[in-house]
Image (tube, rainbow, N blue to C red):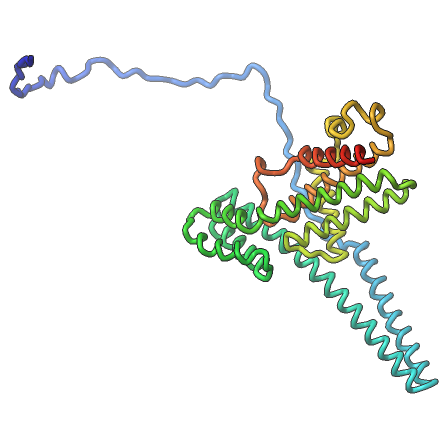
Length: 339
């Protein structure tokens, strides 16, 4: 059942202009400054520190000594070759040939060291461009990061299929941050699994061999050699391929990263993953030292991966030290049960 409702017809109303005028006077609002109850402390602004442009005398001294040693070495080689020529022309040519081979080898080593430093510097530039593209959503930085990443992995057979897929899908995404993450997914994420295996292998080796090594000096040499080899292997995996000087520079970068992140401090929870009720309760002190060395090696490996990775990984996706420690604990428990 429906009911009818009567609608009124539209009408026009005329307002009286006298009624629309407001007779009330506008209220004037005044603001008075409130005096502080206590005086505020004034923090003095430190003066701007000027960068000292004085010469670095240590660098000048090392450069001068290196130049002097090179001149002395060249003069000594020249005198040796001349003395051989005075005795016999054949011996002189033999000495000249050997000196030429030694000089060519020295130049090759110097070129290799410079190239290793350049490759490590290229990884740093890639990280900076990728970080700027992700944080600021910058198109130019994203293009530079993706182009540098393609050039870095262009000659690697294991990255050919991923490079092809990246070229197919990179133009479908307009956001710079997502483009960088897409490149990370295709080119960098597969290398993380390999880096995980490298770190775990080195940590297990350090743990096992430190336990059975009789002398502490041998422990230090072995742990140092294993850590340097691990750094070179991780850097080569991500495209660095460092030489000797670049490896030491990478080690300094890793130590700096650990010092900033506070990663050298080990809590008792990590040790308890190995020993359960404590080192003294179940295992010998020697095995405990091996466990600690293995954990430190794993932590250094994770820091090296963060330093060498061309694209910074998200905080939520970074591998935790506890996962590697659990692998080491399972390995040690299996080794103990087999023995």
